[in-house]
Image 1 (cartoon, helix red, strand yellow):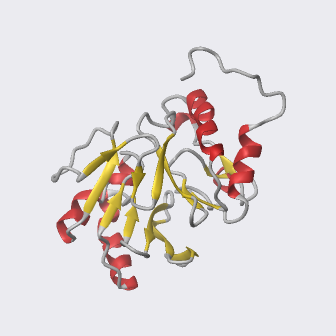
Image 2 (cartoon, helix red, strand yellow; image 1 turned 90 degrees about the vertical axis):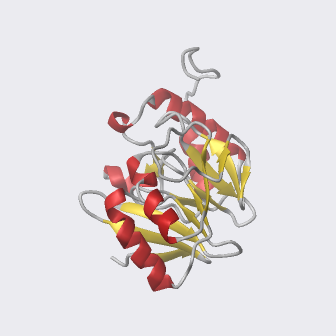
Length: 217
């Protein structure tokens, strides 16, 4: 498996570890070079090696949520590079250098619109760039092949790893308002064609009620 894959023009999937699970970061090497998430603490050196292989010096780090496999490399990246760093307003952090900024629902973060999709965690966000037709899904969804289904589709993160699985499903409705052909995920295979249409088909399931129970926010 190639640890560095160009999944869209100037967008790189940086695989940091494949066992016991696959951990990733994504690099957007256009305009201001931007990393989205930074893997585990133990994979920080691997991430630095991937960036050196590409010959890219990142200038910005955006974190989708503060799970250990998304923010673990934060301190190592900040120590190596003079990064602007942006994290969700809801995230609780234990890092050496405070972030440059906090963002919330529908805020602009570089080229992205931040979409708050709580459920997996309270601070979980997707980042959408409609101009380029792509979205980083955070852990709002994962690749279906992670759960033994055909690649090229989305499923929800496992309930055992989610704070509130019903809220996670309900809040996916926020993402169907956006258009993107490519949906990048951290677990399983990314969806590289018709990602928004496939997400809508998943969200608008047959016999879906017109409203959710009151206890689902």
